[in-house]
Length: 229
Image (tube, rainbow, N blue to C red; front, top):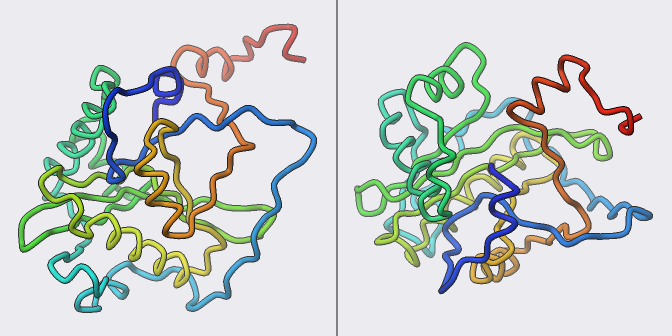
């Protein structure tokens, strides 16, 4: 996710609910931390492979033409293409440095950092969801964080995004997670309405702090400004 550039930009025209990356939460008072919702009961012990949750036919009854499958290394060109398509939609293509080798190492290596579900509509590639495990100290449970959600423009409004989200919600319950969360650009009103209809609650009192690139190197080397304390 590339936060600052997204937060400064308002895209003209309509936006799509089938694209997830970052939002710009509104500034808030630091005096009160939002209450954590009650965690759902654990359904199965960790870990639960996604395969066990994709057997329903269809997974989302309202979207009979949509099927999901777990990505494999053979899907790397497709995954990278979706990442680039999402970046292009957000006018941030110049910030994409990922390539197939990096994705292979971090998605399918010895210690995968994230997982990918691929969607197909009537047998053709339709989109993907890339997600990873987070953790809530308040809940004392893991969570699922959705980093990227992308649906091919020709496949939108056919239930692809909904089916991917249903699958990840089921996976969260099966893995004993306390939450399933993601970010959305603050100008993407259609997406926000879509997520609200699914029961998502905006965490508008929070902002993300990021250290990357040269700043990350400086911080790791102890080169911290005196005023930082």
